[in-house]
Length: 126
Image (cartoon, rainbow, N blue to C red):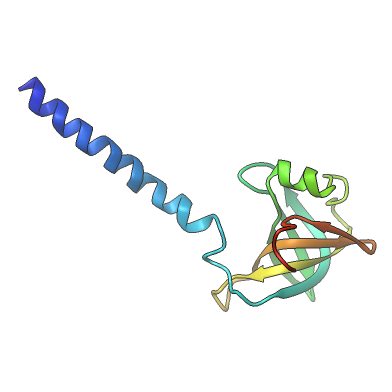
C-alpha cells in the first residue's frame, strides 16, 4: 500500500506545483499588455516598491493609473532610486498599457524624470 500511495504522491506533487504557479505566470511578463507603445505623464500620488516589482500610482487628469516599475535590482541598474519615485514628482512613463480597455495599468519600460531617461529594459526599444 505504501508503494502505491508514494507513487500517487510523486504524480500529484509536480501537478500541484504547476497548477499553483499558473496565476503568477498569468500576471508576470508582458502577456497582459498590448504590443503598442504607450506614453503617459502624471504626478506620483502613491508608491509601493519592492518585489516582485514596484508600483507607483499616477494622477493623470483626475484619474489614477497604476504603473508597474521594475524589481528592486532592475530599478537600481537603471539608476532609478526610491527618492526619484517620491510622491509629488512628475514623471513620464513609456511602456505598454493593459489590453483590457477599461484598466488603467501600464508596464513601464522607460521612465523620464526631469528630462533624464531611466531605461528599465535596455534590451527593448521604447
